[in-house]
Amino acid sequence: AHTIGTAHCNTFRGRFQQDAQGNLKLIDQTLDTNYANQLMKQCPINAQPFVTVNNDPETSMLFDNQYYRNVLAHRVLFQSDSVLLSDNNTRQIVEDFANDQKLFFDNWAVAFVKLTSVGVKTDEEGEIRRSCAATNV
Image (cartoon, rainbow, N blue to C red; front, side, top):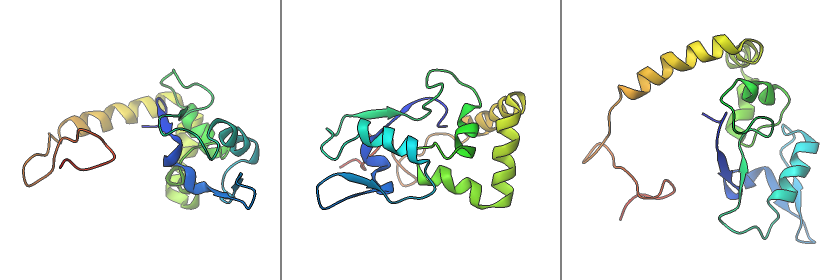
């Protein structure tokens, strides 16, 4: 899902901490230092809530398997993506998809068909949110 798109700075801010001078510093050692420095420049502590960065710093407008190469290089926005390397099963999938774009495309197609069959959850089962960040009032 993160091969295309953007994310607001606050969605990955937990990987950084504000120091005594009011600057961000990297606290998540699973993140590549050079990439972290780029992110801190794009999303300084005083960044407006609407500021976003590309999910994929390499090929942000292309649907491809670069995301998985980014995971292996520790250049992903979200901690949830970084932990894919901490389990041997998910690590192997990341490595396989990073090395074989056709394999990724084939698996993505199957997963997308499954996702489209889930249906829309409404009433007691769920809601279509006006804003992804909050439940409807």
